[in-house]
Length: 317
Image (cartoon, rainbow, N blue to C red; front, side, top):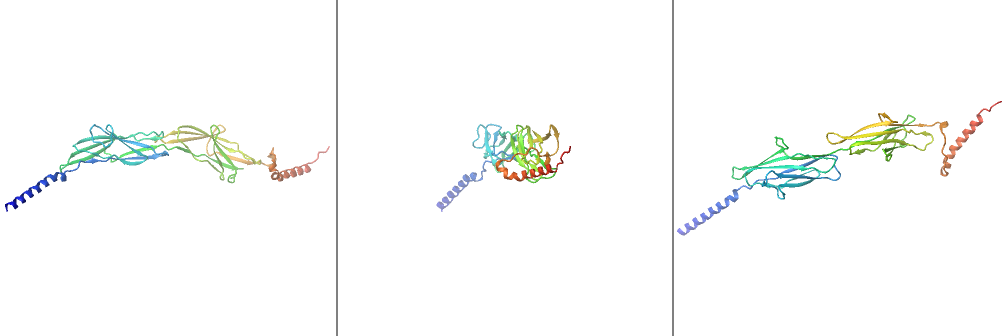
């Protein structure tokens, strides 16, 4: 009986010791950790190749918990283009107030406007009622006193100044057929930038995107055709485009037009005229390959000339 009681007592003590040893491991709370997310937003005319943005997290005091891989109290991560990313977790094991700064390193695109916001992160570690630790994080933007919900860097790329030149085409004051006439847009040195034909009375050039401040000069003219019965409009329009930037950083254009050295308002107009027969001078002689084509016209001219001479009254003395 005594042996049985002794064995039971020994077993009971052993179980109590196991519970006493195992309880702290089961009940103890893990040290709190923090994972901070960052978002990069982009607007405007984005570059063809996405840019890398360097986001930095720095501790205000040496010894503050940092993500693994931090160098000299600074952790850097890269976001390519627009997107969201999260800093690796930071684990806190002691009660205290831990302060950090988060910012973005400016990019290198000459048309980029980079968010220079500095976020201040305060991490409060306090004792929990269950004996563990509790974490509270507070985020502030620049010197603002109101809490910020997220870390967001909003970058902007300048939109170009976009210009499109148009003209109006008339023949004897009327609307001509499509593709009857050709028009040229040149730069200040005379190099041809675009060539367009008319669509009914409309002449529409392609858009030109300008990403540089300054003055740009263009010339708009009609290309003289080969029809001997048409008097082509020799007008030349000088178009000056001054490009500047607005408050948002976008390029904006101001356009002025001149004709014959005088200010011109409205759409440039080219009005060709059909010549009367007696106004035609110096008809070009046909080449060998054009002889058959031009023969009917030459015959008509000879017949009309002969008729005129036969009907011309003779002088009398």
